[in-house]
Image 1 (tube, rainbow, N blue to C red):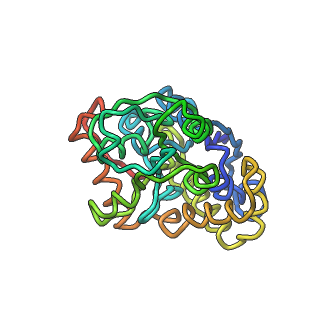
Image 2 (tube, rainbow, N blue to C red; image 1 turned 90 degrees about the horizontal axis):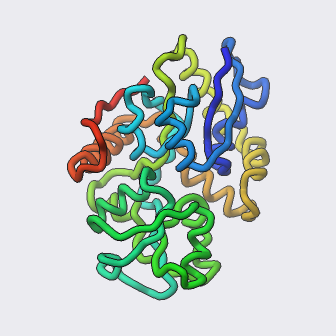
Length: 272
């Protein structure tokens, strides 16, 4: 059975799927094709149920919940760290209110968490990799950074205004679930598929050096130390399985999003 797996061309996602490119995991009759696209594109594709398995922003799940169920693994969850709002000069969270913030997409969890933290805001969408330079050049006063930008913004002279993962932890006591993996509900042997994908994640963690070497191909020019740190941040025990803490974090974020009217329908949380 052919399974297209959508994920971002990022080191952490590549690390998770490395084992599927080897013979270390029994595919149980599934043939995997990896489809790479930025997270905002994957969110939009999921609304059309284009791929059998895909990474999406957790904030996008309510928009696709009729077609997809959450896989119990593969999530990018950070405790005390997450997307970062940056500026060219030191600023406070109060400075953000009423000011334009460049964001990497309205369906990203980063944008939802920003709204939860500061309320409704002025924003402009831009591809995530362009946002650091947009702020550094002065074309934007504030930018919301995801992916490796969370680690490299100081290298181009930008200042942190707020770390949304830190804010979320102080607000709720929970880790911040950003990206999740979902599987289309019409797939036969969905349970078997989930187990194969889970085994692939475990295999990557058990063969970290080989998986890291593979992931470096997706580093977009950042050095090995930064790639290693980024993977350590977002491929962890909560990636293997949400556990009670991870599931509570998912439920709380979606509950708060529903409370502010961020989703078109009531959220029906459903794990494979």
